[in-house]
Length: 153
Image 1 (tube, one colour):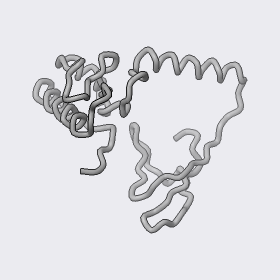
Image 2 (cartoon, rainbow, N blue to C red):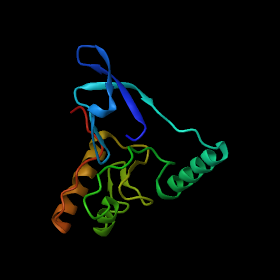
Image 3 (cartoon, helix red, strand yellow):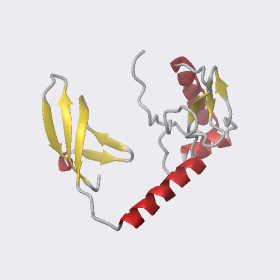
Image 4 (tube, one colour):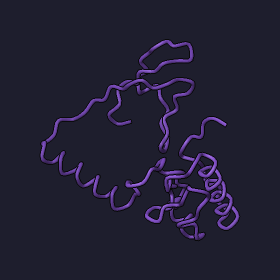
């Protein structure tokens, strides 16, 4: 949000418009842009030393490789972090690391990721999401909010 100038959106009738960033409400991992498809964005970036940029990119990639299951198909972080804690810590604390539903598995590397062993379908993933949410609520008294958006039936 700090470098965003405008977002190009397509509304439900197919009209294309540019929405200024100042008209978008930003919250934790969320930009409130409803009822439209985002087709592009204009960013205002700052010039910097190329070697510093490459070093920052390399460092970020190493951190992701060390902490996330990038070698297996997944949808990224499943749940938003509730206040004062991380979703992965809650999931880990209730013993769900490695839990399975069909071909969907709670990642051993990062428990807020559900990976596909190659045979998972949407039903498997949704079942595992529900199991995690239910157990966290029952055992920790915290309702986890989805970070991913489930579409379809």
